[in-house]
Amino acid sequence: MQIKAAVLREYNAPLSVEEITIDSPRSNEVLVRTVGAGVCHSDLNNVQGLSGMPLNTVLGHEPAGIVEAIGSDVRSVKVGDHVVACTSLWCGFCRQCRAGHLHLCSQRETCERAPGDTPRLSKDGDALGQAASLACFAESMLVHERSVVPIDPEIPLDRAALLGCAVTTGAGAALNTASVTPGSSVVVFGAGGVGISVIQGARIAGAAMIIAIDISEKKLESAQHFGATHTIDASHPTIVKEIKRLTNGGADFAFDAVGRKEVAENCLYCLAPRGVATLVGAIFPVTTELEFRVGHFFVEKRVQGCYMGSNRFQRDAPKYLDLYKQGRLNLDDMISQRITLDQVNDAFTAMEGGDVTRSVIIFD
Ligand SMILES: [Zn+2]
Ligand SMILES: [Zn+2]
Image (cartoon, rainbow, N blue to C red; front, side, top):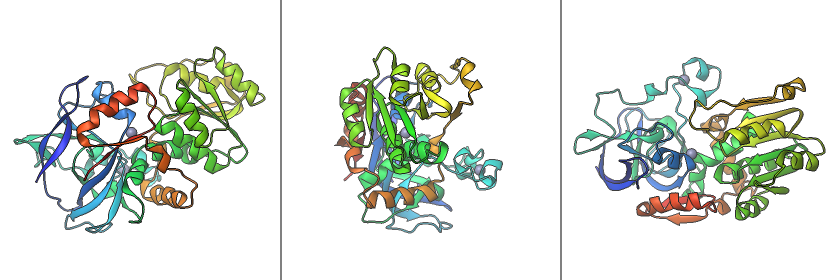
């Protein structure tokens, strides 16, 4: 089948929107018609060549859509189901899967087609890469059934798409990775799609104080709308001191939703004794070395990594949508603009401008 897709052909250049070929689903595969696809900061990192994403790859990893066809062995969804998808594929039998850490599966390639087999995506006979095993900047996606979760068809699919990355990563960082406690104080550096989701997760967990930090005044206003109780401009000259003043000695939880060395280090410095810093945003290059003054560890502060909000997507996605239906997770206002696939490159420009929470591509 021929579909329109946005392909990474060259770094630091616009994605190429072109006709490509998508194969039919086999065994455990599902063909999904894409309805909504969020544009994430990681997509921009891919375009900039920072993340090691190979060229000739169809990008996009935050989708929702409708099942069009299924392979013979698919049992978890049927044709017509509304689904949301996530990159966290899992094999079910590796050490991490057996321990319940599905998001850290070490053998996810067992859910892919073997190298040399007919590719899922191609152009004139040449295989194309499939970002995050999804490639949702395309009219259809051909994915493993464990990439998707069926959802209530009454939930608008543009809103549901946000679960694929931003909400799973951010709310999951607060609820799964850090286990924010009721009454605690929380600091969130960065108020984009992921930072806003951390703020919402902390609010849902019952944090008493949520301090948002960003360089954009508009994003700080938005942070308050989503549950931040205090805001600090990121250009504040003594940011750690200001956090310690507001929290009366340091925060219980801090999150780096930016992905920068200085921010990660400040996450530790702004904590109270026994506080936990969670590094959510990816720092590039991955060889970057963080430096911490060891005195902070004498008071039992901790720093921990976080990958995709420590998700179990099949468990988490329905839970987040229940919270959405109850009005406790605000997905409606996270969408700053709805665009077409042809406008995908404009979404990157808007992202670099700094005022957008999420742009979502809508397919007819
Ligand atoms: Zn993402
Ligand atoms: Zn596994």
